[in-house]
Image (cartoon, rainbow, N blue to C red; front, side, top):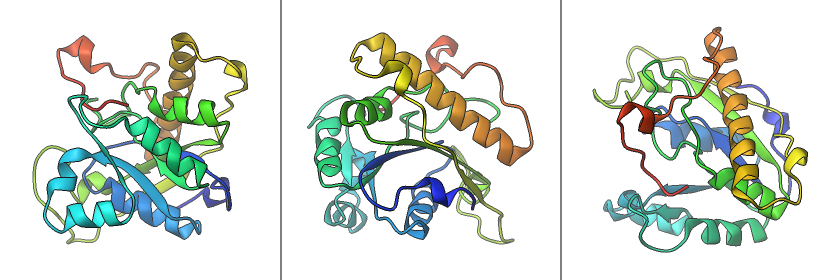
Length: 212
């Protein structure tokens, strides 16, 4: 676990990790707690309907995100948390990566929009190894033998090239910069060079979930 110093000790910020397993929120939460902050997640709305677990999500102030685009605006809810100087975790891919090799895929604009709208840090994060504990699309929980999970927090994204802009092109370019930064961090953990372009599910006949 490296780069904890890049997580602000006070004030609001957006943390943007890659997404490779249902186990991701636990490892991300542990990372944020180790940095002395309490995380707030934008989580799939279906998880809020799970007995006990759903109550825990609501009790701890997590934010439901409807896949089909219904329900309350998650960005508005996240803005309320930011107003209270809280840490908001947004998985910019919106769902698990569809990249066949596990690299971060094309991102959605929600994380960038939050950071740019409120003028707060946008911090990329990478983790690798968690998919061996709980595979992304198949297989059950595997705790034995013990798995190695690595996490790396990067420097805040420099959003100054798009300062003061609220147009879609600015959000698009900033999101590309964010996803490239996350991919570079994942590459550092894997000891590999990431592909030059992010995987686009729509271009490969795959659906994209999530509103952000």
